[in-house]
Image (cartoon, rainbow, N blue to C red; front, side, top):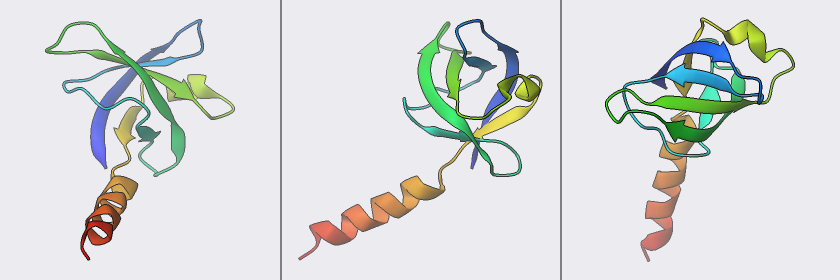
Length: 90
């Protein structure tokens, strides 16, 4: 679990906008502090040093996450990398 940043607002286009200090990969899974799935990263824009991230929410009431800190779910990525390493070995 890696800290993404605090949600600044909910955009009219249906995205949660987060200010962050690093650039996540597109389609990364986003979770909240209780490890509940919130959505996926759809766009990264703005200045290089402090970019904004647009998250496509997959929850019923995304506006309740305004002001909350969100995280990137790294649990599954580690498992996938381990499986890829095992498959390459013969």
